[in-house]
Image (cartoon, rainbow over all chains, first blue to last red; front, side):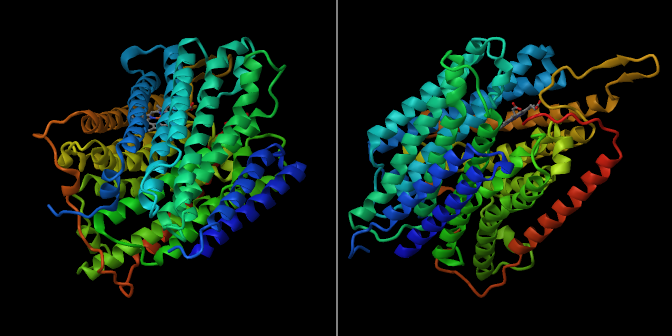
Length: 60
Length: 563
Ligand code: HEM
């Protein structure tokens, strides 16, 4: 279950990063500056995934 | 009445006095914002329906105040309180809110934002809740306090969300727990999305704030920045609602998800995964959007309801399995075993019905061809009030009925009365929604208060259709009923916040519940969840087809505008 928290938040990071990149690089979508928001979100979920993995060994 | 071992009630009661005061501050301002929002809603509805002879200009200002107060401040103060509460109560080993001074700073910043936004209407701003800066071309300075309010709200929310994350993470770092419960996992994801919304808020509102202060020449790309923020703002309260359903159902029946905690976490994570890809449809009204993007956006937006539907199925299937293990019979007979006398159960039950109705009608608008025809009509407020009032706000109120007395130690005000209100609210919404949707098909515009028109063409005399007036009357009747019910709820919540009268009301832990915990029956049949989804999909399909049919018969000239 500890790994599940990290894996799920990590998947969110991957999906958000991919979409942020797409929004930034495909002009047809007309959402270039949305990159800032989704890109920030991707980084945030990466940090959360790392925090979720940070539990001390030997804990419940 | 059965005594319950509600984790929500017990955990909230066990919080330390400092945390209780913090949460009470958030919930008190939330209730105040709800009360103000209802007053402004009543005035708006009166303006639209000709009641009380309110002038159009006043009614328009009331519409602005209604949207801002209720959509931004009610929904975000109440979410701020709940995200902190759930992180503190449902994370094993947390016990208290982390970084409490930062949470207080967040509260003060959000409150300053609310004062700033509301006061902008007395300074003469003509903005509606979407803050379209093009309305300020003549005098940008009129929008200063409006945008400042939203920027402060975003900053405050970011602080609160940081505290909620810290609350959930701290026990992990202290080695007290290894993994989160599904609810604390959901609280972390919800806080993450709140932080993203705060950044989206800064991204959307800082440029117009600087413009109104004379610090920049113009504002470019507002429609897109707003639509990204607005997309997050759709998702956040929806996610909050289903998380609270999960919590409240556990507390009134003792059930646990029959699919197990892992699956619940996966479903909450799916919420996060679907947020960015489904954001495209807000751009449908942009005239130069490529056709391919429109089609892809339309397809992707079909997924928007998937996470909500999944949580709904998890909850209904679990309830059904537990109820059958208690002897519930028949396809629907088990539903009678649920504790409907409990005001929280009644509210959540009706919230689910209203969400389903709102969901069915909303699907029509993500068809890009129908969106263009209906987006500027009363169809839009007609359908989304099912979601905002009947689904989301009713769920928050239900949760407050449990939480406020647990924080104050006061009694739950007249539970028998409160248990009947959700049904009356739903009747009011039915009138408002049916009238509004029908009005939308007949072309009644949204946000326009002067409905009468007369074109004296030499060939043809055109008047506003007579039927418009009839439909606005139905909307007015529904509005009054909704306002009356919500006013009673506000009164009840105020009594629970401030009154120590022991004569009226019931100890919240003694509200009628059923205790099914431990009786999980994983092998019981549970058909109603999946069947209701099938029924919803059929209704969505049928209603969308009907909409195409109706609109093909209406001669319409389209001039698409923004949201
Ligand atoms: C007593 C309950 C309520 C009544 C009678 C009511 C009535 C109305 C009416 C008549 C409009 C104007 C429609 C138009 O002309 O476009 C409106 C707009 C709106 N309402 Fe409500 N409402 C209620 C509660 C709520 C709640 C609880 C929420 C959200 C949590 C909400 C959110 C909104 C929003 C976002 C708008 C659109 C504002 C705009 O277009 O600028 N309402 N409401």
